[in-house]
Amino acid sequence: MRENSTPTVRKSHRVSPFGSIPFPHRILVADDDPDIRSLNVKALTHLGYHVDAVEDGATAWDALQRKSHDLLLTDNNMPKVSGIELLKKMHAANIKMPVILATGVLPAEEFPWIKPSATLLKPYSIDALLGMVSEVLTSLVRVPAKISTGETYPGVFLI
Image (tube, rainbow, N blue to C red):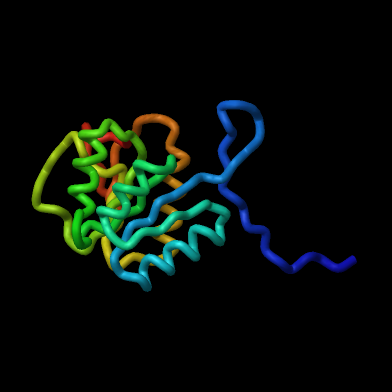
């Protein structure tokens, strides 16, 4: 008997509050670098996530107004609206969802009430990205926020 040599890809599903039918998580990716944006979309889509992608923070804000997402993966340094400015807008509009902030430099401003769920320091690997996304989406309880270096920040919790 011949074994199937094709690896099994585990799809990301959650259970609908309206029944037991699973559906994939929807992720919004915001990055002004088309190569990084495309790579992130391909990797996340490959694992079964539904992914919407935008090129800047202003377009991300519009997308958050129009469609429900389970996670926002955003670059910080973008034209029009930065990742931190996007977090501020979400806080002001009472939009609550996990946010992964991808950045080369940690923001100098400290706003404890708008911290991202996690920070992914650039450059990062696809494995680091996928691991962080999985960790954030599977966190069902409030846990301390982490930076990809493994540091935790006591008193800062996932949104």
